[in-house]
Image (tube, rainbow over the protein chains, first blue to last red):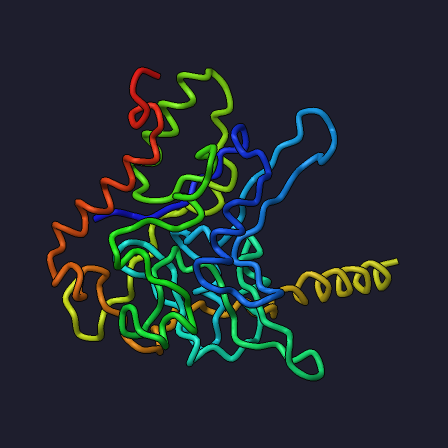
Length: 207
Length: 75
């Protein structure tokens, strides 16, 4: 089974924000919520580096660990998703996430913080596939259409790779060998450095 | 002098023993169970009709399509 991951290649990213735009357009993400962002280090200085940042769908996701209402789950493909009907918008996941992925709509009165919104790896959520409820809450379910995340597929320079970990790691390895530099994968160790978190066994189930 | 030594020893003993009563302040971490609605597999829909193999084939084709060294011939 594929383990879905993102890989951001800082050597290739040209800060075009195509991934951000693709995500916004694909899921009709509301104003003020950015499921994906492009971060530039040493902006304006020769040799600046840009990286596309969103939920990395960590192997051992800290957001899952800190959620007080346990609204997170991990699919068999390794995608970290959450149930917005359970989320209370406490923001713990935001503080736990090393990538700043969880987003909170703040368009309500008195600085109201709404339910958490984040990148779904274009895998929708716990609603019927292709339903209006799924689209409204989580966005389009491209994975169920046999497609990969819009951001990665839209990336013009292929700086952002998304998909089966083995395949994208092979693509990146091949790329590094050809260009002879830039083997460091930003965020890869932070997100996938720990062993895969296995779903908790059901009570009474044999191990 | 002897009294002073005894007093010093008592103070030192009290100081050393004070650390013995310390209790662990770190709670035992317990992983919670997902409380939300169940989600279906991506191949359990009208498009793939439960055919996991067909879904994996479609996703793999998209995966490999990201490698422009292979996609663009003569490169």
